[in-house]
Structures are given as C-alpha cells and as structure tokens.
Length: 157
Image (cartoon, rainbow, N blue to C red; front, side, top):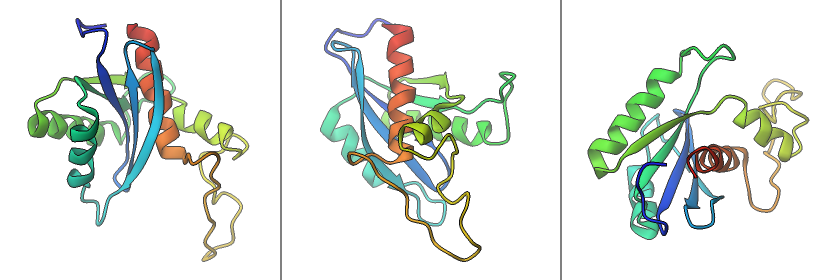
C-alpha cells in the first residue's frame, strides 16, 4: 500500500454513466462497506453527492474499479472510467488508484440472488419494469464498489 497512515479511510467507486456505486473502507480494519449508489441524471455525474461523501468520510485516496476484458485488455467503458478518475483527481486533489474490477458486478449479482447474472431484467418482458431485489439495504452497484475497494485493501494491506 502506498504510505498511508494506519487510520486512513478510502472511498471506492463502481462507475457507469448511469450510476455510481460507492463504498468506504479503512486501512486499520482492512475492511470495506457499501455506502450508496448515486444516480446520474442525463449522464451528468452527481458531483454534489460525491462531495458530500468526501466531506463526511475524509478519505486519503479514491479507489476506482477499472473495467477490463477477461483477457485483461481495455474495453469500451475503460476510457470513460479513466476520465471519471481524472475528474475526481482534478476536483478534489486526492490520489486515484485503479483496480481491475473484472467479475465484481457478477459476484455482486450472485450475492444479491440474481443467479450469477448482472441484470435483474434478464427475464423480463419488453416494456415491463423489474424492481431490483435488495438484500440488507445493498444494491448491486454499491456492493460492487465494496468488492472493488475490498480487493484493493486486500492487495495493498
């Protein structure tokens, strides 16, 4: 782990253009917990929501899940995530650490009971809205952020 104090707090992000799952973790305990999911309106990031979380948690660094193919190559969404990370760094002047997020959404889906699928709409009829199943207040995006941050803490602890 980079040279962060033992009492350091980190925020983890699972970014997509429609929503951002966010988690918090501590170096002292080496654990991450899901916080919330911020919804993007018209693909505009909820910077006010992010700033509020930064003020509440005072993280020393931000961990962003980097989407890669199963071969470890960049994919279509990788560049958007890097842009988001650069924007976080410029706005808040905090270090950004990227971590491979392969399979975190699938793992989160499995934990939440979506039978290994990443979408709760997989069997829905066209035009029919399907409510996301929640378990213990978690949704797939914030749980994915928790898994991303936990992986980073495990690798850098």
